[in-house]
Length: 65
Image (tube, rainbow, N blue to C red; front, top):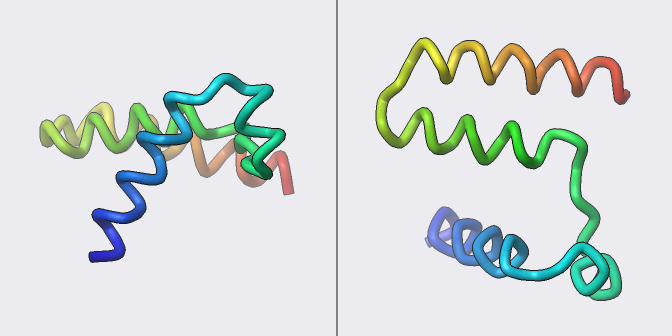
């Protein structure tokens, strides 16, 4: 149930302009696009691409925090 709600929330946020999303309190992370690509790679079982994207997300998170 939570996974379905999370997917729906992401779809709604992806449909908003950056200005509207921010006005509603949604802050995009610096890795949001990479995370979307990672989810896409995993959904089609592209493990090499998923591994590469996962490393990129982790690297950006280390530098951000």
